[in-house]
Amino acid sequence: MSGREEPEAFRQHRPTTSGVTDQLDETTRLPEERRDGTLPSLGFVWAGVLVAPGTIITGMVAAGGSKGPGFVYGFLGLLVGTVIGSLCVAALSIWGPRTGLAQMAMGRLAFGAANVVPQMFLIFSLVAYDSLNDVFGVNALANSIGIPFPLALAGVVSVEILVVLFGIELMRRFGAAISVVMVLIVVGLLIGASDVQAAPMPAGMHGFPIGPFLLATALGFSGSISWTVQASDISRTLPSATSHHGVLWTVFTSMTLPLLVLGGIGAWVSTNAAIDNPMGRVDSLLGGGAVGVVALLTMGVSLAVANAFNDFSAGLSLVQMGIRLPRPIASLCVTACGLTLAIVAHNTPLGELTSDIVLIAGYYTAPWFGVAIVEMLARRSQSEPWMVTGRSPRRAVTAFLLGFSILLPFSATPVGNDLAAATPLLGWIGWVSRHVLDGGGLGYPVGAVAGAAIYAWLRRADAEADPYRVG
View 1 (cartoon, rainbow, N blue to C red):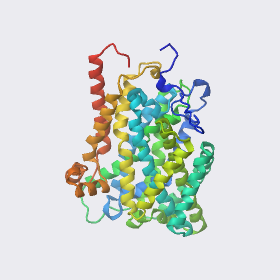
View 2: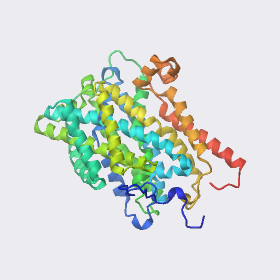
View 3: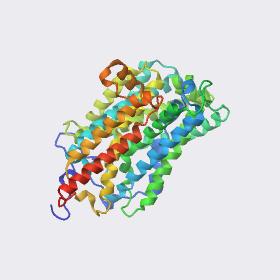
């Protein structure tokens, strides 16, 4: 390989299938002359992405109504999970300006050709989030204009398809407009919540509620650390000379503020009725009427646009994995999968559905982060890390899968508990959560530590066996 020639894994990929373009191709390294981002713009993008209705609903579930720890411990759990998870995202974001690579493309530094393994987990998680957003979007439309489930679902999916077909520019226009309205909605919610008593700890609950607290912490982790798979996608538009500390604190601050403010609002107003009908609770806080209708319609559209972002990323990953379809068609396949799952799950209580999807869809990011951060730290002295191929994808995949397996006994989801009860062979899923942690979960920290420790050991053993090998 010549001095300036990039490895094959990082050359621009142009599929030959008719209609497939390399628009926003993750395998393309963004050159210095095409970067014009700034630290303030980085912060505004992250804040805009996270000022979303799903964060409010997660806060309601964290406080838990009559079954949860109440506002104080629910918000404290969210705080712990959000702060640690946001630091993980910020740590990986540093590498965006340095390499110019998107995060999944950067994963090839460790996973090589086997990067398809975490990409498959990514696609599954995006389909799961699609279904949850579809259900929440239907909830918003049903509360705003009182239409039945099939019609409301058709409305949400129609917006989603429209944005998928017209691409990234329409996403940006929708996103900018929705972000402005969402900020106004948040102000209205803060005013409305000021007249409401904070969700109390249930009367029968005494002492420190370790299980519910850990479940709230897991929800905080999921809302933050799950973004590690897209961490450098935004920061790579910054010049390579951008301060590492500036990127770290900009990403950390712009993530934690919206996640904690919106999650805090949700935790403050949490009740059983709010968890069952979150958009109805939002409507009541805003005082109903025309203001409530506009707010809920905006939230419905916001959720549909969020799904379009998910569909775009998943479709792009499918094309890069070798699926010979135009990117829009691949994205619409993901849309259809999310729609199907939403139809199947729409009668599931929203509290359980939120816990299942928010936690399950994000768990894989913990061992993935462990592998990625070890690889980045090992390459910190390389001036052009994208020029040096990894040693072997097998050790990265092994650490990723083992880390994921190790976290499962510490996971805490309703569906995991149901599977364990129904099938004795799956009784180890959530075992520590049920028998030791009073229903709380430690899957995220356990997965991240296990993935990092196993990968660091395998990487070091490989280096000792072959010290002259590059990578």
